[in-house]
Length: 171
Image (cartoon, rainbow, N blue to C red; front, top):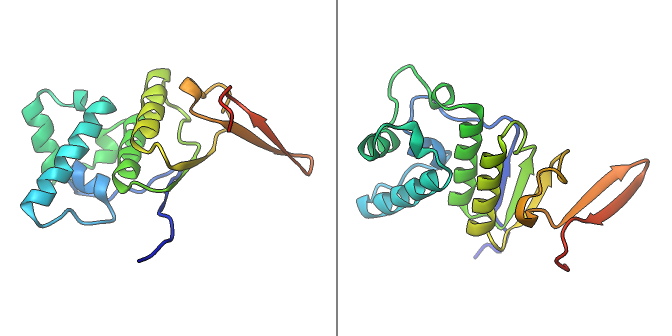
């Protein structure tokens, strides 16, 4: 058995495939399971995360959410155009949560998000990946540190490395 920890990275510019359902986009680059039982279980978990991150308000009804989610846009339109920049970031976060990494790398993931979305994303990351090591590049870590999302900040300046604790919890 491979003991290498699973690593997942959210970059500033995430790639999303064209002409897919929202579920296929979230699960990319993997293919959704062929087994109906496994697929439905995965879709149910994805929909739960979509609701947690308040992406379900993009649709007029629960039925439309389910249909759009499972079957999606199969036209020339793409989800990247349908969803806002913040909503695309939420989709990328859901993708990370589905992958259940031991190490989550975040590259300016919170840039451009409204305060509510930022708090929601940090809450679900902490809730669904409680044991993951999270390493984040964030030029506004002190301002973006809701509910002690960050434990510490490492500053690299003038050929020095400085570690600063950001919350009162001992490490």
